[in-house]
Image (tube, rainbow, N blue to C red; front, side, top):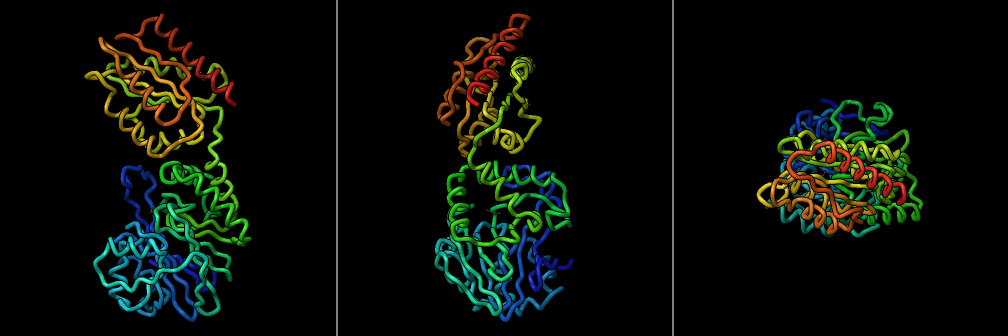
Length: 396
Ligand code: FEO
């Protein structure tokens, strides 16, 4: 494998993970990459490493440019092990006395991850490091994605090494945004919805701060996926839009079903919603991964959950998606619940309670239909969908 030159003397040296399909519960149907970057200046700098098992691949890529032992400085923008897993071996190989620059929280977190004797050098927010022709600036970006996260900015080349931010789980040799189509925006959106959504207020503040600082950004090099070089503003603007959570005239209907009754109700509800000119996306939970569902929830105004009642409670798969969604803290949503039941029928009220706890405005106490819906039930479900559709229109 060879390094890919991004700008003169700056290379992408990370690894492609073609086969990963589950990234701690997030479906990665296109695989992923663990990006690391090499700057060859008077000092040779490596920014981030890769997942531990890809360390040889990264060293091989670095070797296509320079002997890895010539690396003088390593910068760790983020402690999570998809970017730091290779660090102990790299340092062992190039010399453990060489400095690893990181944020102050990076110092704590890296120390808690690795027993190796790393020469960790914490940096101040806004501090600079001269490496020859270039000066690198460190910007703390707490919680994007972890408390230790930071960006590194190369003033000379106007490159922002953005760690997890602006990434996508997408494996490919394309490397740059201009070599892939608009499909990449779906992967960027999915990444935002499932990893960064809960930090939306911090993202808006950060983008505001970077704008105030007047940082000129020609290229964004994230730690996953392709590099934004043709139009970095496109992904920055998308982050602003997604962070605002202003939502579209759209509803997502998420359900599971035991004997198709809740499924039939879901379909009639979806039809009722669509009759009001509202885009609707139904998801049978066992046919769609939770991270795909969350991607559609990101810009939907209404979130509608359906569950049969099983053993006096909601179906376990529905509880899974509700729990996942709660952690991601979607904002400005309308909520509604439905489901079939046999004799007790607690599921709808439980869903409603979950949606209320997420701060959603409840459209209606919920629709319950006993056992199997008949023509009357179809009509009730359709009307319930119409009510949801009208509520979405009224809220826009
Ligand atoms: Fe790609 Fe937060 O690690």
